[in-house]
Image 1 (cartoon, one colour):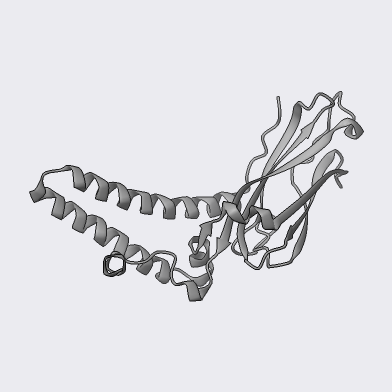
Image 2: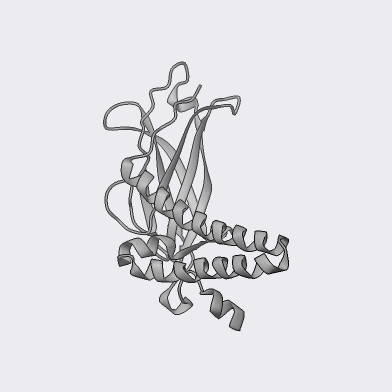
Length: 204
C-alpha cells in the first residue's frame, strides 16, 4: 500500500474556500433548474430567488479582501496544459528518504493561479509503489505549500513534501512520473468579475 500524505491546514483552508464558492454557484443553478419543473405559479418565485442568489455572489466576492477574492477570480483551463512543461526526478531529502523534485515551466502568456500535480514512483514492472498529490501554484503566496501563482514564462523548482523510505525497491530502480491534475488561470481585471450578475446575463 502507498502512504497518503495529509494536506496542511492552510492548504485545506484554501481548498475549502474554493469549494464553497463553487457550491454556491451550483446551488443557485440547481434552484433555477428545479424552478423550471414546477407549476407556473411557483416557477417565477423560485427563478427570482435563484436570480437574487446569483446576483449576490459578485457583491460577496467584491466585499472580500483582495487576496481572498483572487482565490475565486480564476477559471479552469485544461486546454492550457500544453503550455506547461514538467520534469520530475527522485532526490534524497534533507531528513532522509527520497522526495520528488519538480521543474515546472509556464511557456504561455497567462498567469497560472492554481496548479496541482500527481507524482507516482513506478517499479521495474511499472507498478506504482508510492504517490504524492500536491498543489505547486496557488493564487497567493504565504508559506511553503502556498507558493503563489506561476507567472508567464517562469520556471519553478519544487521538492514535494513527504519524503519516503523505499523498502525492497532501490531508488535507482524507480521511475517517477508526473501528471497535471488541476490547472486554473487567473482572470485579469480587464476580463471583468469572475461572476456576472443575473441581470447582466439577461441583458446580453
